Image (cartoon, rainbow, N blue to C red; front, side, top):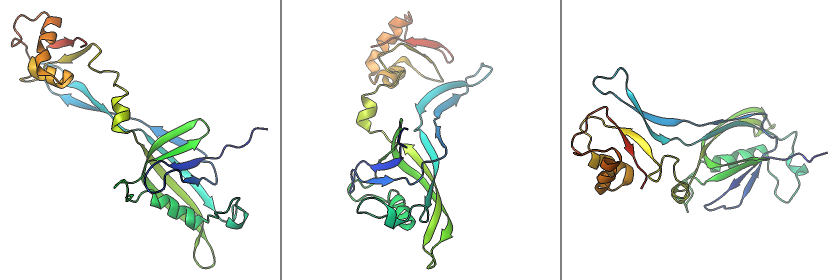
Length: 218
């Protein structure tokens, strides 16, 4: 019989790198949300707005965790460190605080079987449903929302599918020009000649709003 894989949250950087927060009960379900950002531009003479992709939004991982002192009392836990519900709630809340070394909340990795999600805790909510005689929380449901975290270096080393080394199409909007288009797409205004040659334009100033142009790869 296969061993039950337990979920865990690992701190990746800051004052407590490598520290692990064990999840007592695996979540019964989780959701991963992803969205893109688009800009709608109105062009005179067209029946609808032009939709242009701006960027991708960070993925979001959402779940609910269950903590219970009576099911997993501290004195029965393996290892030297015993964690009560109150301790675990403080551990999770600490991940929302600004780390003194990073000047930002620390990135973490949520691991459970094949699921590996690197992010920062975006939102945390807890509902206490049972208490010790002295009022200390003994049972809690914790809703956690992780937002995907990727370093700038990681994103630069993983080019967008629509990068400057691939052919693509763009539309002229308003008083746009080949120089401005080259600056946006290639980060080099002098590459307007490449666009002109790729679209058989004799005069680069003779472009009109609503005209589609092919942007050749560099």
